[in-house]
Length: 66
Image (cartoon, rainbow, N blue to C red; front, side, top):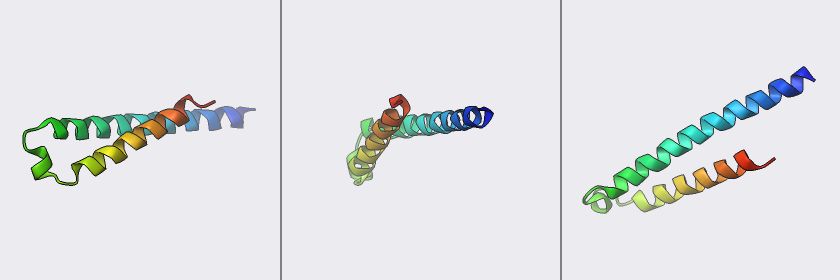
């Protein structure tokens, strides 16, 4: 029984770290996208922003899934 509690706590802390990093990365790309001439300076920005959005959505899906 204690092993299952430790496993669940480990999964919870892993998800929390994943969520925080996904959140920071998403908003960093969002901030870069709002800068003037960001599309010219960073031509691959839309692809990376899309990937960070997908990562955040998947993270939220796993976090709210029971």
